[in-house]
Length: 101
Image: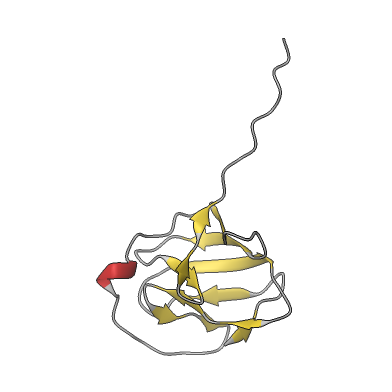
């Protein structure tokens, strides 16, 4: 369990994915990628990719939870999907700008 603070970098144990926390909450959560816990800088470990959590992460995309409390930026893509407390995160959709006509 980790408390996600803005600016924190995390890396996956199962693929090359790396993320940066944009928005976090004060509570401790379990953040996973590919079904395995993500590691903070300086930590090491290895695990196998869970086929049920292999939807992938795309570099440059922002991932958010359904409540909008957490926002993560993918800085390096990978095969594993990111989840918080077992709930997969979704790609944040850009807001439509008003027409200039």
